[in-house]
Length: 72
View 1 (cartoon, rainbow, N blue to C red):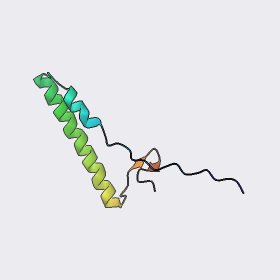
View 2: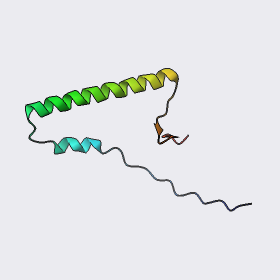
View 3: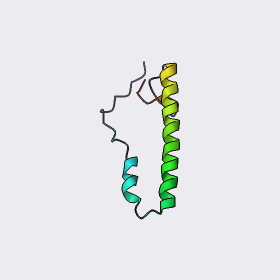
View 4: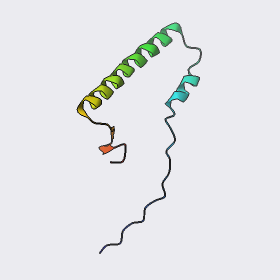
């Protein structure tokens, strides 16, 4: 029988850091703020639609790279 690899110690992944970009957007023109708001609204609606579809079909986990993000 082949030797099995040992399991690595568990670790916690840090949370998303995307919110930090908000502090780097300074001195925007009114037009820039409008575009960013419109893009955010659009992406939010897409995410909400994806979540709704997953809830309807019963897929509680998100797939990342062909694998379940929940480890299943």
